[in-house]
Image 1 (cartoon, rainbow over the protein chains, first blue to last red):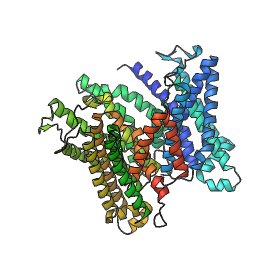
Image 2 (cartoon, rainbow over the protein chains, first blue to last red):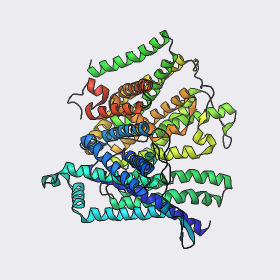
Image 3 (cartoon, rainbow over the protein chains, first blue to last red):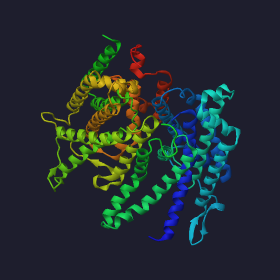
Amino acid sequence: MSGLLLIEQVLNGLQSGVMLFLMAAGLTLVFGVMGLINLAHGSLYMVGAFAAAAVAAATGSFLLALIAALAAAAAAGALIELLVIRRLYARDHLDQVLATFALILILSEGTRWLFGSFPLYLDVPSWLSGPVSLGPIQYPLYRLAIIVVGLAVAGGLGLLIARTRLGIRIRAGEADREMIAALGVDISKLYTMVFALGAALAGLAGALVGAIQSVQVGMGEPVLILAFVVIVIGGIGSIKGAFIGALLVGLTDTLGGVLLPQAFGLFMEPSAATTVGASLASMAIYILMAGVLIWRPSGLFGARA
Amino acid sequence: MSRESLINLLILLAMLVVPAWAVWADEPFILTLATKVAILALAGVGLNVALGLGGLVSFGHAAFFGIGGYAMGILASHAQSYTALMEWPVLIEGTKSMPVIWLVAVVASGFAALLIGALSLRTSGVYFIMITLAFGQMLYYFAISWPAYGGEDGLSIYVRNGFPGLHTLDPLQFLALSYGVLFAVLFLVSRVENSAFGLALDAARQNSDRVQAVGIAPYRLRLIAFVLSGMITGLAGALYADLNRFVSPTMFSWHLSGEIMVFVILGGVARLFGPVAGAALFIGMEHFLGGISEFWQVFLGLVLLSVVLFARGGLIGVLAPKGARHD
């Protein structure tokens, strides 16, 4: 295998990793601050993608579509938090799993109702299409832009958590929620904001990825499961863990699909090697997760179980 | 008689009246629906051993359901094509006999539960939910990408497997067989609940430290419960595959794990007949709401949401609230 192809696959892995981070950041914040496990996070990703596709079809502007995705997902997140989620904070994880499972059914079928069963298409804008030369290799400009945007958002989120007043409150909420309520912070407003922030990040990821893949009902579910794997590997509640976990999962998933069949090809017949390699590659991230959890039962950067 | 026993008796009665009515009204489809309820309830009874009794929120029980299903699919497909499953070192042939298939399904899913449980039980809380989910997904993707047994397309079995003395393709006889298995397992689970093991497990769920202080290892109790739970769900998977005469990777999907969990919670966690009531309600809603609207899942979601938010303890929990004796 050539080194150039390997570099290209590493970039692809990086791209899927940063998008996973946008999903995982919201999940891990919501879990860290509110102690809530939210299965419906993938539906917010879908809401963002549909909003972007609808606005792009109406106005033709990709930037407007991205803004619409952020706004629609944040609004949907805030609404869900106010109506349903805030009744679940005091419940056990079992109730949270079931209620957010019900939300998936409602949001997915509701979207099908509104937009129909056929996938929508969100086109890459002309100023971002086409390849770009990175030294010896050609790489799609749009995917490179996604990596840059993802890294920028990750950096911004890190600054938000570390430097701003909202970030201080979020961290305080993770540490001791009774105490910051006693210090006069409006905790329910903080919760709604954190949930809407996580939803907006998921919506942005949905819109950005929607331009590469098709926009359809149920598109959030595979990503949701991957995002769960990410936050469990990174340690639930840790943004740094989510970032490292996302890159690990993105790279493992992408490189595993390319490298494993070839690795088995060294000592097996080609057809058998492809079969075994492909099967193992599809399980690779789950094996990675199981391995991490056996080694460190609360993830790489997790503080508590 | 306690209120819960009365409700259990009513559920039993309903389970007998509905098929009787279906035979009288000549509605064979209702018989198939009742069979589906019984088999999915069995999967829920399995999960309830881990979830209700052990307090282990497993989000990956589709793994065992799927293993049971594929045990049936693999054995029956070899018998169907008259090829041996394995020729070396020992000759293993496929089979079309249900008791043998059930035994293989139970042993295989029990073994898988032992492995998955031994690793997963090192964690707790959300991590346990997630790692069981990950194991389920691992098997799901394995089933999709392994081409020997149909891969993504699944396996079709043309004739339902046989059970000595029964004509299993007859809907009523297959229903009776499924009921028989369900009742036998319910009886077994009720005995386990009241055994020394069941009491210790219940105590470990409520206060693990105290159980440890009196010299019982909670990890072992939970592992045994998880294995028993996986075995029952695996048996249900084998029956479900026989009901449809088809197995596919969707038997491993996380949606199915979610649905099995819904059966348990809808009916009532840690209630003997909870999964039966839950599965009946779920399949009933699916059938009737599906007839009303194409988008019935919206209404299903709303019902589930109201149950979680307002009717805590599920159907049986609302009808027969538990006294101060528990929790």
